[in-house]
Length: 377
Length: 170
Ligand code: SF4
Ligand code: SF4
Image (cartoon, rainbow over all chains, first blue to last red; front, side, top):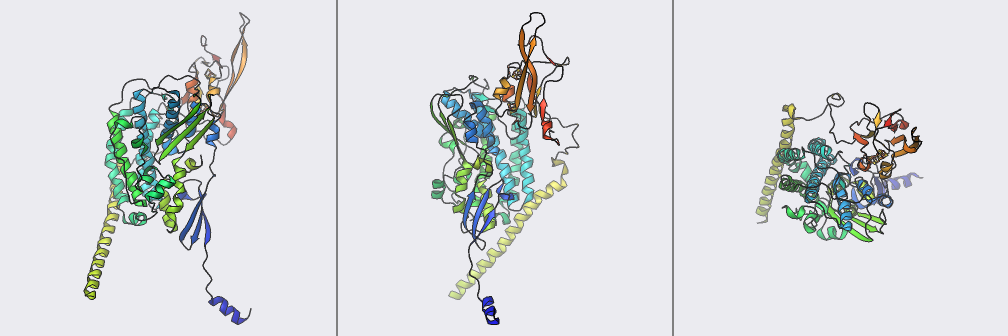
């Protein structure tokens, strides 16, 4: 190269071009093994492509060889933070198919434990969300309060996370004698502690700067992508299954469907915090009115669903979970399909993240509250 | 006119700027106050000192730690070797190897349990085996410290050597 060429080479500014970067599969803020292929222009996100399959266990296929009682425990391993609600979905679907009359006591117990599950899931989400945005303290506060709920579960259901407390026809054991007292103690305690969450994070200037007007999702997009749960409701999509299609004991309790219209990260954050208050309200209405009776309806040892298709939807902590069972009158289903909320919510990530910065993607993902095993199944 | 509008704008901007700083700092202090409260009130901190508290740590009675076969003081258990638990288990964690016992008086042979193999490493602690057992021979124990250096140690034989079925259990 001549000297002149060298000088012109240096002087020409190279054209900027888009480049790719892999976020995950081992990234702390993807909360699991999710790989996002980002197309970037500088620090601006042009496109987000989720690549799935890193934790696929073919749960739906496994269901085809399992009996209906055995399927229930597999759903613990989808969205492990709403495991009780997943179990309930399968049980409700099977009970629908069998035309089984469920004791009132079971309905109320299931509802209370579902709401406790929702609370514990949101507590963990709150802690992790703070941590994703750089506030490690919140993680410890979230876990401190969640511990009390896991204690309740441990005493009544026998496990802390993968509880498998539901069986087709009812619940595995009756509630523990301490259950009501412990739950009431927890509600009194948590009513005092929840304002602490607001003090620590909600008002915090760094937090609000990083979440307000970030990751916007319009109502139309939320509906077309099927974004449900608190994430959908923060965009104004009234999609609470507990209100629209009540199951278990939700038809007899009063609670508000939390709806925000802003559609940004902060709205999704607020929706979950408000949902915790509503969950506590639901539990308070039911905890003293658990009807007497059996904890399980009588079922045959080998359950066979009549030929046909069955569908049941429930509201998990992340959104609408649908269970679709096709039966051919054998002891295992012909086909099972789970419509998991995480999968649909993830599909909207691209729309939400476009035009934002990489750091905003972390905030957006946190407020979507993704659980990767739920997406991959 | 434009000047004064500009002036108002600047004035408003400055005011917003200052109130933003004020609110921002205030919000940070609010958060710090919560943290400060716990620094000065160590009694409210709920951390468990595991494993130092091993002696006093008691798990709830329903806690599902591992499957055990209940033996009484005479080394008798209630398992008939019916394999109901093996069938109920979703992941093949239980293997029942049954043997034959010949009654010395009548000469009839009955099916008894020879080895109750339990793969702890595959168990999902779902409790279905316990529910399915017709004689309530097995239960969930509360032990949870299952880590070992060799995976083969997690395959256990649950019936103790020399143990027999309780008389009268069918
Ligand atoms: S608890 Fe469940 S997985 Fe474990 S041995 Fe029993 S049936 Fe099998
Ligand atoms: S433990 Fe119970 S279910 Fe299992 S083989 Fe023995 S008697 Fe049958």
